Image (cartoon, rainbow, N blue to C red; front, top):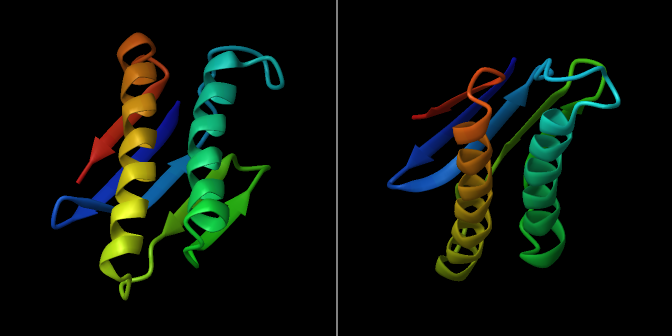
Length: 109
């Protein structure tokens, strides 16, 4: 089971925690885990390279863990850019969750 915790502040996503393997398939062949990883990692890359936001992140491939947080001092434009990227990420995760809720635990707080 993959646990995803999305933390919001003032209706904006400020932190993402993704950990564990879904168990849908064998490691290296698990399409649900691969899809989740792609969605979350692409969002992080978008924040870092497209929006140029200095995101704090921690990644551990062995444990299947990726956590990242936005800085608190974002200006209005950067906050908007981050929201577009992260809200899109949440749409993708939510859609995947609808089809594979036995393998994904999604919590938005």
